[in-house]
Length: 326
Image (tube, rainbow, N blue to C red; front, side, top):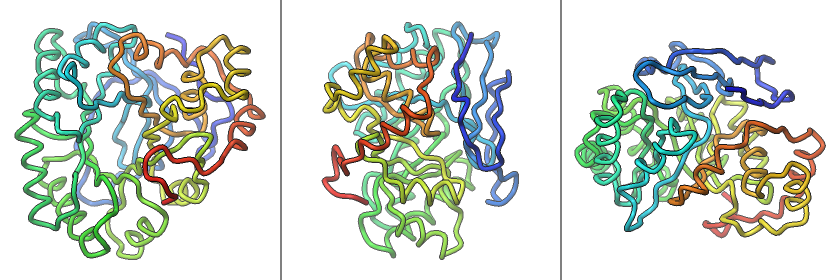
């Protein structure tokens, strides 16, 4: 499988890595500094004997955990319990990565277990993410984590996120303490945050606590968040773009249409390619098999550095959800 990775990709150590590796996934060390590495290296996973499908490139996080570089989101739908089975039939089937937190953890977990049983795929090949819905303090967070585990019935959660910084410094601190404790107990493999601004992340740095491996924010050419990007790069926090397609609101923009025509790609594919070349982990959401298949076909072309810069210049401070900058 040929993968076109950005030749201009800049990592903090100045290196790019492309190698064939197995899909092993180990639990993070409890010591937050142990086995520490800078995120941002792409690795390509080869076909495994147990899998009927191919692996996608992975993005190395802090502490050497691997996360697939494109996620699919799961939102409430009458068809929600079927989406992983749809994914398993697509060309890129092995994406097998799920974003949860919308009241469908039980359905998601059931579909994953069915998929694993049917294909012989081990649980470790699935990267499952869910979120803390409300920042309600230490005890409530521990209880919420256990509920998520019970509902999904997957044994552990690969990535657990605080959904937002809402609640104030004390609530954020207590919730994060509970999440770190759950990770130490083996209930969670990786811990992260969502919708955190620089001031929220700086608060964690000042407190000298274990930093999140991921900050999931609204990122796309029309909202570049250069301050958050710079801060996360400085502190080795990977960035996951939760609305990389701008929910289709800018598909008719002339810049996107021109690039679509040049590369014979859909506007969504141009936006996903932009995210990858910026070093982000894009999270497109869809329940459509056609769109899911299309979203992964972004490795056979590469935007030029001038084209990426031109897309950066489209920044208009547009967020598709929060209505304000973080």
